[in-house]
Length: 369
Picture 1 (cartoon, one colour):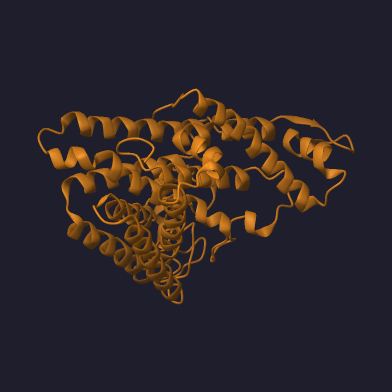
Picture 2 (cartoon, helix red, strand yellow):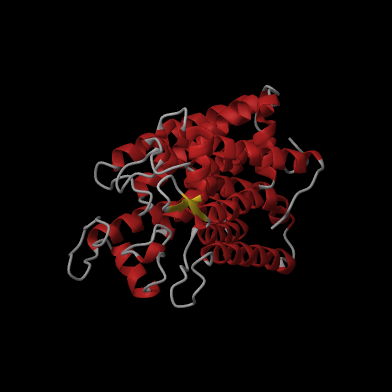
């Protein structure tokens, strides 16, 4: 344990997830390797694991943050106010990032990654505080089954029931009705839309189950083994369900919840075994530094990336190109193939931020949200 009530391996897992996010968000050019891009629609690439892993971690962290307060009982007014405050801050940060450069009230995107994290944190925290394990399992099952039924049985005007295409699915239809032009790149759907948040909350609940398992008084070896067994069952169930309800990150399908939740449990088990059980933490120090300052490590790299994308310089033919692409070409493009240059730029960008957050960690500087 890093400190009372905090699981060190969870910080490492969170940092690994943030590192993956930085790499896939920061290609140096327009030719990244396919695994470093999202699936075009159905399917699941390594990139599609980053967001569900983070929500799974949010759920696990809720247990370690709130379990003692839940057991104590008594008035919870200050606790609830703190949860609401954190939810509002996360949601506001998401809107702030969306407003660069799309700041106009008529077109700013309202949903987003941090907004979804905020809603899942709020739902997960309140469910954990006011219900027991049986109710939480029942709610997760209801969310997964209910979402599947809604997406496959409810007809969409002009498309009918069960259309899981980009425009004809029920989630996209609701997002267009509710958000209008305030969707992702003003498209026909939003990957962090309203209805698909049902699946995202279920992912958070899976993380809560993992947290309860790790928090309980049982031998460490049993904890790691239980995560592996549960992860195997969830991943297999998700893969089978995908035969009827395909894996899809943008729709956050029920099969995707189980499949990615299973892989998240595997990864957490590996981190727990290496860091907390075996004490082999030297390799993990850079990721731990990112993990303890996770939201800051999410926001700052995106802000700099936006600056690199929005700043234009003269390209080889005199036409303006993004500063990001210009830097990638100058640093790596002259001696690496395009895909390798893109990856090298991503890794260099990650390395720079790792140095920053390692120094913050060394100085014990933590920005709390």
